[in-house]
Length: 374
Ligand code: ADP
Ligand code: MG
Image (cartoon, rainbow, N blue to C red; front, side):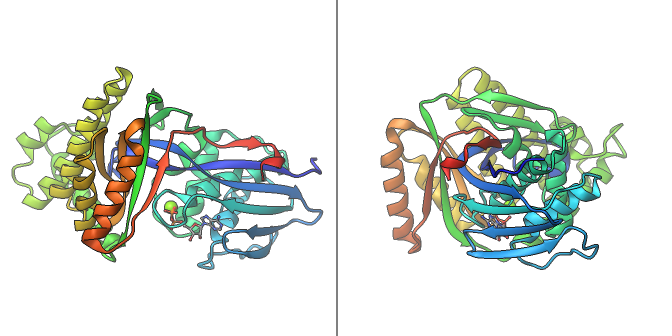
């Protein structure tokens, strides 16, 4: 059993293309970004967890043998949830002291939640001498967020936080969990612009979209064999068999089906180093999210429009669930400073809101790091 402390790092992420496709068994293309959460772990004699978050400047303690551990509506739900799911999966954990520190902005859509889950998972597993497959760990972290923290999320965030690679985008098949790492040239940056707006609508609209997708599947499955998700339908099949769908449902389906196709085309574009084509697909994705899926917002549209006018921008689109949050921009490295200044200035002029701007590169997924980097 280890006695010394060890430190694990897990990154946040941004999704380049493939929005609202995850719960339709489709494709997504996130990138692990160079903003991370670190968890330093050291063993405790008793079977308890002492977890301190530097960001929240608070420490909590729970007993691993407490059978009634449950959601408290507190930040600790995320790391405690991971421990609970590991134990429920049959991995007996050793008591641990955990110190959490994050540079991923919290609650901004860059998945600080997956970063803390994955870093905690890696730390607990190492501290307990448990052997677990990274895919399994990703799934347990997702389960912790869904069932313990109570947030309905797909597998993308935890997956890329574990499997991401430097200068690579990760195309993930959300059905099979097969993935491909695709090259991102080193002369571009991913610029993430936070609109600083979050509309209340998001949760109810999300559930409504999911129901509309399900309605589309139910209808289309009557005409096309082996359809269990919109992933299984082509645009041609939608055009042919979707005519009787309510117009709104038709458009929702069209977004998901064309977005899946765009992710696959975008992967080929990256393989060929064709950033212009990749950017064009990002623009189409934004339009489809705005017009067909109707999950954009005035602020997101404005941020994207401002970005498009600037030299060196290959592509710009909203990223994440929508109704506010962030845009992601693929920008030539020599134009990064100009981009940040001009977008920030113009956005503030119109909205009176000061956007947060993060200049990121694709980074490695979770790993152990020397303690001295703390
Ligand atoms: P996002 O993942 O977009 O940052 P979420 O609402 O999904 O936003 O997750 C944010 C929550 O995750 C925080 O409110 C907190 O509960 C938890 N969390 C994330 N990072 C930390 C941290 N460094 N320390 C403690 N809790 C954290
Ligand atoms: Mg999150």
